[in-house]
Length: 184
Ligand code: OFO
Image (tube, rainbow, N blue to C red; front, side):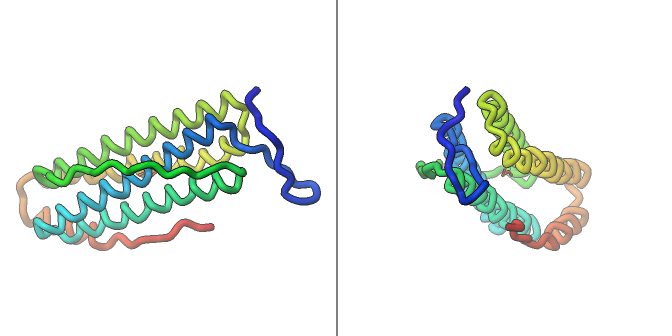
């Protein structure tokens, strides 16, 4: 019902423009992804400050990935003939109690992002915006992985408890994470 103007991309190729509602929601998601990046960078700085460089590495890479998620949305909005409008990114917390506190907050934040993606998908379905549905499917799958990764570290931290040697082993494990840019 809310499908907008058709943009002609060349002979035989056409794509419908984003509705204003979908454009606003996607812009809101860019802001959430940028905030995620900021949040994980802040957490990375905390881990660095307490000497856990592996945890810091994992979160720094996570921050980079969130930036990729924001850029993917940015590009999609432009491709669909929309306006990417960038709002203020909220300042993230900088004070953390310990590593468990950091990763409990990470998991909670990813669950929040999942609900935000689900909300976007609901709008796409409501608007019969098939291009957005297809695009958002990537984020739906990504969120399964994002939550699982955070949950795994939360569980490992619970298991390790106060065992300093086990904590250092976990730190070493997280130091091995490498950044992989998103495929075009
Ligand atoms: Fe960590 O999630 Fe983005 O989308």
